[in-house]
Length: 449
Image 1 (cartoon, rainbow, N blue to C red):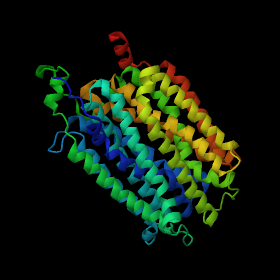
Image 2 (cartoon, rainbow, N blue to C red; image 1 turned 180 degrees about the vertical axis):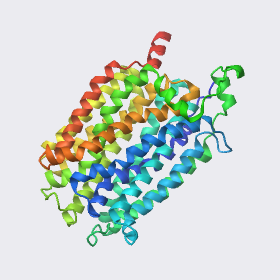
Image 3 (spheres, one colour; image 1 turned 30 degrees about the vertical axis):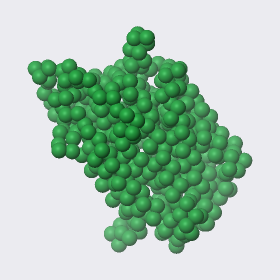
Image 4 (cartoon, rainbow, N blue to C red; image 1 turned 90 degrees about the horizontal axis):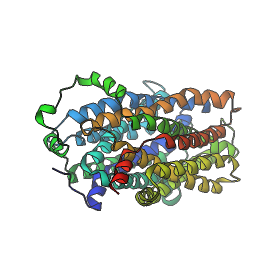
């Protein structure tokens, strides 16, 4: 038995839920630091509040992957998990900007940080089963296209999420200022809209996509009934980690430096641009100029996500021409230079060029490592290994969360723009490490040619 080849629109529906996931994720990335500063967080404390997000992912992802490999329900194998994640993430999106409602129980800052944790845990519950679903359903020669379509939808969702506060303020007329300690109405409405889109988009994938049953997957992969080995439950994750494929070990270092850089960008972009480009004091987080700077960061994040969506259209053709490894390495170099260029931007409009470069690397980070990885993973362990692979996304974020704030305070003289420069250097290191990665699918294709 072989996997059925899917049409473009079937692949589109397969990944459509990622549009909503990334819209919510973009709202979080562009605005969480802004919200936490409104609630009273200092700039050098921001990375510590963000640590709950990757730490939760470190715990949640492999467990979700493990159980999604072994679960079969009326909704299928992967779909129950990302539907549950979407519902929980929607709750976090609605409640985070409204954390001041709970001040009679605890400070708004801590409620906001708690909602950040709930959101990121829920996004983690949804994301990796989605990536495993693409690898489950598509034949190997359609996987690059599948992950590229996923990246396109991620880009569209992220643009919508990133630009929404700016659009509501400047096109609709919703206020982006509020009393001290309160989140502006434009942000509150943006998070509520993001929650609604998240649920709707996930439901589209749930109702339009058919998964292969465990029996069909065994036939596809020529696994006989007497070859199926019962594994030792959840603790077997540690054995799987120890026995991870060589390609996965090699990619882990590429992922480490890529996501170390991304985390620094997400946490420090708003204070860095407000201070370095707009010339505001580091403790200014309530003025109209600061809110305008925050809205502009949302626009910039939308730019890099829009570029990633467009670039993702060309990724399959580029990868076919020069190989997935070279495609990824070149993309990372371009993004690294884009991050470093933020330091030299003469005004906020020049930052658009920086974001175009970052968008190229972002598209590749979302597609190429997974396309390379999928060919090296045993099919019956696709979910758990996709979850374990997330270790190399969240561990660098945890490390950056622990050291990023103190580095801004003690090594960068309080200027967070240098955190963005270090992020750019981290991208360049990741690009150099791509050369050591073995791409199993590319080797097979080369032999067949």
